[in-house]
Image (cartoon, rainbow, N blue to C red):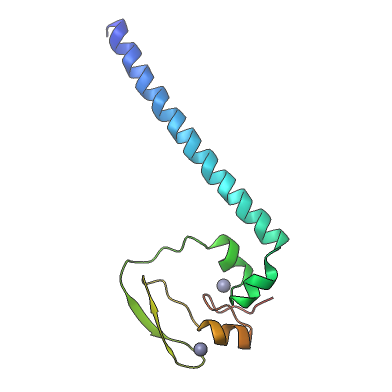
Length: 110
Ligand SMILES: [Zn+2]
Ligand SMILES: [Zn+2]
């Protein structure tokens, strides 16, 4: 392999390594911020008002669901709810606050 080809190859490899490193760092930073928010729970009042448990509010924020308009009913009052993807909630926001269960995953709110 010529010296020129070798240099080009290494430049490409290094470029990819730098990009990956930046992406990893961003991911780790994002995770750290979420963990800190989770443990400090400074937004507790707002969180409880939106009917979300600590996990759903801070950790499970990028919910993966299929992209399809999905309808389901609140497990408590039965009102029909519409979601932009297949990742649906258990309760409507009103019931979640009223019965103190997370509207998304259904666990008890604290
Ligand atoms: Zn409801
Ligand atoms: Zn939850």
